[in-house]
Image (tube, rainbow, N blue to C red):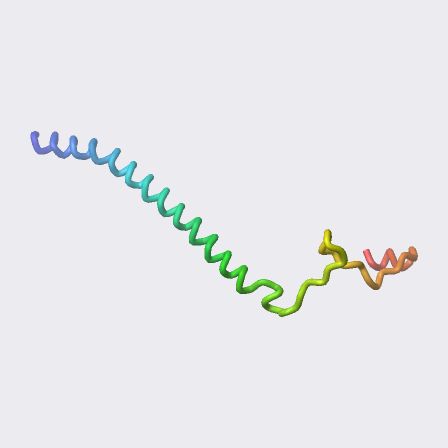
Length: 84
């Protein structure tokens, strides 16, 4: 009887401790995963950037846009139907 009461008391004390420990481990692991994941992604973005891969500057029309002018489009109705 005494042994069962001791075991029951330990189980009641153990549950909150395990819950808090799980929450702390989960929070720390998510924090590390977040920063490591974004850090590694940032490194890949820096290494595999377009200008690094193709080694050429981007074409810019004006200082305020990155759009290139469209080429090879006709404005006649017959050609518009085929283009869309």
